[in-house]
Length: 455
Image 1 (tube, rainbow, N blue to C red):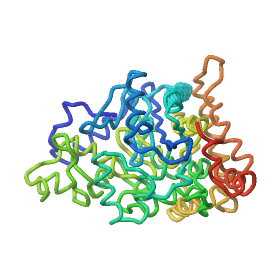
Image 2: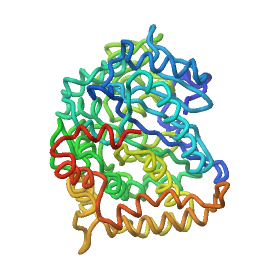
Image 3: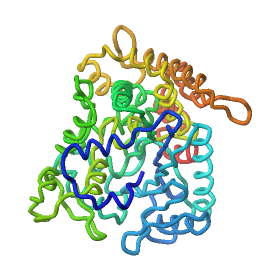
Image 4: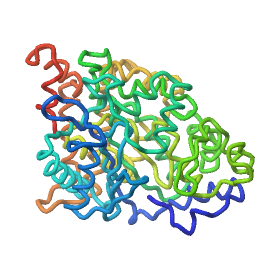
């Protein structure tokens, strides 16, 4: 969500104001919404290369044509279109031109699925004529990092220069990964805490279910979710499982303390990004940044800074579930169904918390660290992650059925869990299915993935 213009320039008087900003996201149950975001890789259908920004088959022309044909408003940096908006939804660009839909806040998963469908149809109607296709996977299966283009966005230039200083895979995260995530509401601080703890503990289960990034540069990379593995060597200051969320006394103020300790990337001043990479936001609050002497952080700066932390679950004025690889259309609908089923029905939330509340810190980390390689087959407490996934899907299904949000055919939202249920029953992740094809029908080539799994 965007913060109101009246708030943007508000100076920050103290820590409580920042906690109050997070608390302002609280909504009564009837106002809870579902915001789904997904990223996808563009490719040229003749040579499978990612499209550049410029040119007659470029991302710039795609955005401008989308805006003109389907009534999207264009946001620009300088002359360049970098984002589109329409009816509380937006289309944005990831660093290498991965196209992201940030969906509107909607009431049901049925609506989310319709929104995704419409978006993919709009994109396809233009991309087809440009000789472009789009693929949903967690990691770019074919091209090297140095073969990926860069989009002309100021914040990405700053991040591109800073990333190699703090981890070896940050540039891969920026240019070669895609995810699907869902943003969900809370009613109170206690509700936020319970949802945060439950979803953080279960995030590795989502990673396992959605694992779909087994290839790097045309070969198997030894992982099922390499996208998830990449986050372990991106930037330890702003990633991970946030152990403090499970500590007594966790709430808005403790999250503010965490965010204030995250090093800065930038401040957006007078229409341009000021490089503040690695600097201390607390000094910015005091007006003591050497790059911006005497300039004090505003609420807009804080809202921007919140977007530069990348933990497995992120708190803004809502909670973001960030653990899943990108994938095909039906999994873009399955992810919100999974989390809505677990978190938006009180009985389901209680059951989901019961499932994970006695996990030790070591167990949570073992799940997070082991799932990228082993996914559903990772051993856990005498069973495997598959057992946890099966139980979580059962709880989610019951939650969705109790929500009883029906489509015009009288079906509730639990229909969208079907792809996940099939994955658990087969004990085969999307990544393992692709590896089977790679070693079989595809004869050791990843090229068929662009034909067989494109949107």
